[in-house]
Length: 593
Image (cartoon, rainbow, N blue to C red; front, side, top):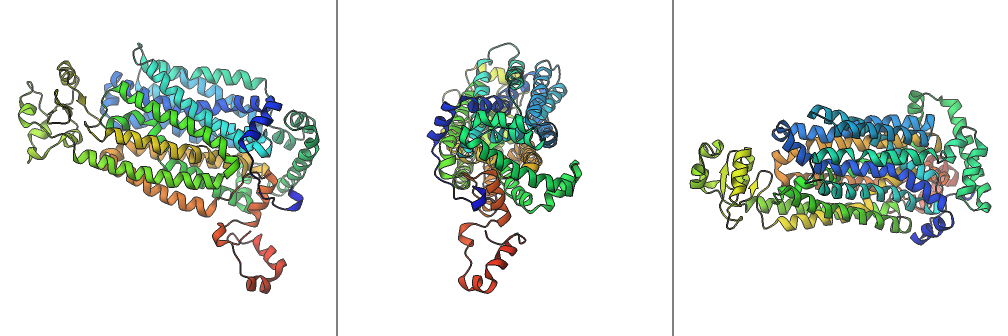
């Protein structure tokens, strides 16, 4: 325990989680009920990728304007930034449970607004409301689960939130496929999201507040009654004592610092433990988003179309595979996160992500180089006023291929006999698209026919396999356990804001980058971002596996450096003496633990 310093975490087995929750099903009930917030987060991330394909068909201005597509996607992210920021304050002021209830109301309202939207601006408004709810839920759900979980299985239980995020994404793709032939396709896709929000609202009404938050509000008897339902009888008093020590220390800081949001922010950045916790927490959240994951989830069908699969239904079906792999990866994370540790899983995950992004960059580069040539005669004689003006006016039209045609914002009507051979470059409009399909030919406007398409889908799958067990779930686990109790809501909120700001930047620029750099250049750029993220995780993120919250505080107070850089020579120790070393480790950012 804490009195004896920082204990070395043991090898907690995944079976321990099931053993404990089997004996105490109340723990799993808490985790799954709160985890619906993660499900909503995942559903919203996945559903817009398929709905966008049909929104573009219903609203021509959305189809024509890339910035409008990016705005529809990213406004939920912008709302989430505000929601996460307010959620951090609400968590500390009103409690974890109340924050989840407010998030459910906001999400439900947003889903209804989107389903009834008569114009793109109303879809955007609904996305903002949904974003408020998602932002609050994204940082509150893992925090609530973490504080209601025994330390030895905390990682596995918080991973259930990650599993429900990926489960929400997977279900959203299934629902997208189910509504492809129903009138009002995208309205149903977006509106169904209100159902799980309503379910969680009802469930949370019957669940208690976080015992740690209750203790900070001097509701000791309530906190004890909840701990008695979570821990074995012989462990309850020990947990209460640990809470008492932690809360008393925090209350001493509160009197010195104050309780307003501004005072807490000032106090947080002055507190060496909170500051080091933020270094780690913000690092993993920003690295998660700049790995490019949400561009894959938001635009997965579009990426599949870039790879040469023109049909909306085919794109959604192939995207379902990547989403399913993401859900499987979350189960792997639950299995191993308490066995091998948070830090190790993130490092190996980032290495795999970098390899897959580089492979995707090469594949898309080769696909662009080998795309079908343009049949000059057919392109100029296909039908009256059918020619692509950029092609007709080009200085060297014989050098054009399908990718040149699409970059000129024209459409490509593939060869009816062999789609990989020369086809027609035509003006981009609905009549010519219909004419091309009537001739049993395939119409392309986002990507070209390519023999490399299956490789692109395969490496997208490998990318998800590398991402999901590590960078998919572990950043949320780290942020649920790395801050002192008094600053836990604030610290988690700041890290979640960093996550959503990064998400907004990446999702807002993805389609624009794809047009400017091509798919190959865009994936290569994300690979470079991941190299930076891997370096930062290596330097700033300590291992918190199996540690009590109070032990994590001691670890951060001592200071963290990677193991390879942690050694101090015997001569240096003799010179300084043990007392001097201990004093300096509490002051210097860079000294070793």
